[in-house]
Image (cartoon, rainbow, N blue to C red; front, side, top):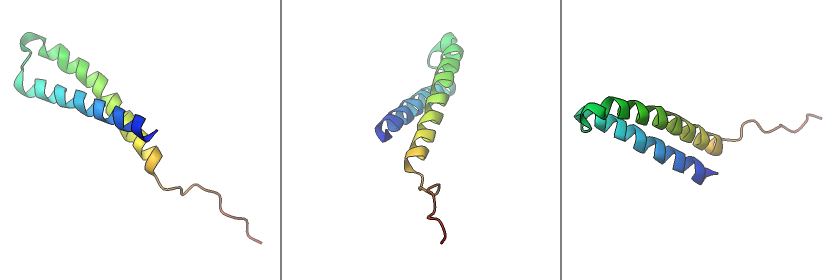
Length: 70
């Protein structure tokens, strides 16, 4: 599952980077506004899901049950 989360994280980072690149350079000309919106709407959830997935996989197991007191 860590690999799955890492893939989502990398895809999200790539989409957000493409969005930032288009925003800063206006490389696509008149279509850049639509492409920025599209890449942003796809990239941010991918990035968030990847971060959340890695957090779920790597967090310490502090929720384990404690042994009962005797």
